[in-house]
Image (cartoon, rainbow, N blue to C red; front, side):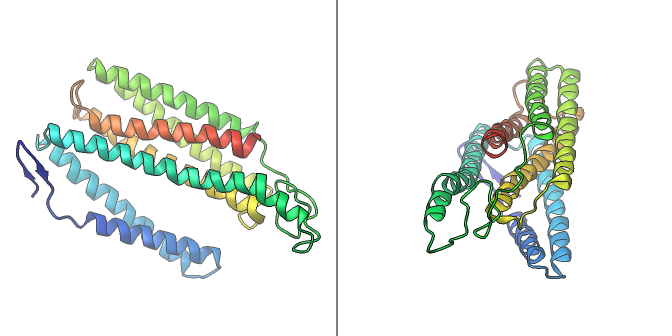
Amino acid sequence: MSQNTNNYYLPAPSLWPLIAAISLFLMAGGFAMQLNNIASGTYTLIAGGLIFAYLLFGWFAEVIKESVSGFYNKQVDSSFRWGMGWFIFSEVMFFAGFFGALLYIRTIALKWLSQSTLVWPDFAGTWPSSGPAATQALESMGPWGLPAINTMILLISGATLTYAHWGLMKDNRKQTIIGLGLTVALGAIFLYLQMHEYAEAAFTMDSGIYGSTFYMLTGFHGLHVTMGTIMLLIILFRVMKGHFSSKDHFGFEAVAWYWHFVDVVWLFLFVFVYWL
């Protein structure tokens, strides 16, 4: 059991971080094995996903139980806010690395490779490129159609989440539930349309550097949308149970911060991956 005083907060030892590491290791390993056509990769990935689902259910349940029991004090609230802030900053740096790689490839690497005939004399140096042996560009994913629709969906979801937050600040549970319900539905629609987009794409992750960067950026963003939708659904259930008030609702705020971050990342994706 965690210890709580007026001066500091000391959490009890927990196995949840270890379980999280194991699940992420299995999912990453399974995905890597799938890319290399290893038969057991699918089962490893599924095992990691199931452990991850157990992790979410168990860890969330434990934190919720501590929260509704009045265990947390102002010091804990402050530490949660700092922790969530640094977590989002780490996510910003995560995506910044991929965007940096994308811009480096497009503005520097392709130009250098197209001029270095001694390295790859047949390289056209065009973007999007399917590799050093390519003599013409791939058919890229255009910005209009599903990408534009998904952009509108995420922008609207940010508005519905803000609507829910306004309701919570007024202790209007009905408004909060409606806003959260709409946001969860929009997140699910976004993921469905993204899967449909992948099914219709004229290239795969094996289609050179363009295919790999496209699917890494949009795929990781889709993973973040999935996690955000799950967290919003949990917050929706908690609101229905009356867990939050206008003065005590950081759980809601933390997920809202995360969702707005996901929205902003998608805007960068739409501009730099789909449009330019």
